[in-house]
Image (cartoon, rainbow, N blue to C red; front, side, top):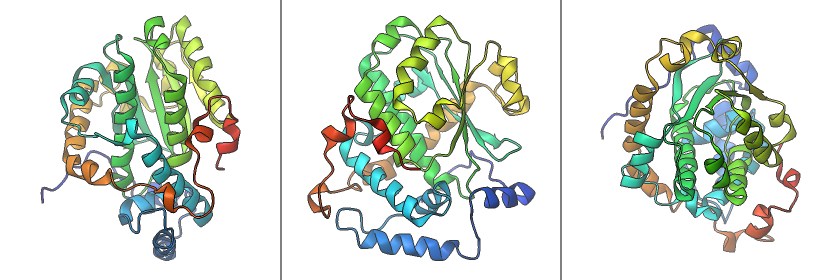
Amino acid sequence: MKIKSELLVQPEGEMWKKIRVELNEDVSTRDRDLAAIKEWLRKQPHLPDEWEDGPLMTFLRGSSFSLEKCKRKLDMYFTMRAACPEFFTNRDPTNPDLADILTAKVQGPPLPGITPNGRRVTVCRGVQPNLNAQEIADTLKLALMIGDVRLTEEREGVAGDVYVLDAAVLGPSLLAKLSPTTIKKFMICVQEAYPVKLKEVHIVNTSPIVERFVNFVKPFLKEKIRKRIFIHKEVKDLYKHVPQEMLPVEYGGPSGTMEDLQEQWKSKLAEYKDWFAAQESVKADESRRPGRPTNYDELFGIDGSFRQLAID
């Protein structure tokens, strides 16, 4: 088996200790917690009987080692895998359509380093402004694929995530192609199904259209996330939140170009090609769920209350 490349710097030393405290992780009991989650998974008739230890530990960390919260997150994760085939099927990163997006249309690499407070930073920007609706959906699929890779690759865990969104190519034509249903499904995945501790979202290279975009997305966000969105008129304002030395050269930093970082993550996704294929069958089976099966129409209804889906 080919050894996978290492792209993410793992916390160590004093930062590692600090992150353990922030994640509520007790090194002496975490294996017991992992065993408890694995036992619970085996007892759920509608969920996979087993899953890999690495992702399960990431879910525990993302749930601050609350077993009940971890169970709810996992249930939603496997539910969304079944409910959103547009995101969780045909995930071959070498497929020409996906490869074209990765190469020439959108960049969204997690940066290798960690902020002084233990957070991972991801920078996302469009390269081609004229995406069609399918390419937008595939871009969101690729974002979740990177999220799946990080379930395994974040071996020690981080204290949260920071996203930098470059709005330079965001224009009216792109905004008009955003589907509320697709965006809502994606936001449910990010906020409810993945073990993400989203700490900050920073938007740079803004224009008047950005406010319209933020207003479009806000109804699908938890209140606490809405308060963590920061819009910067100048890139240098970002340095108050993300160390300049962590950033790619396009944003005034020394850490390689966005193109180079993106190419590394394109190769990383290709390393997981067989894993993505195998995972298509690893999902919830609503016909076997005890009690009332999940009603997807209720789950995704644009007119329904998004607050009802919140898992705190």
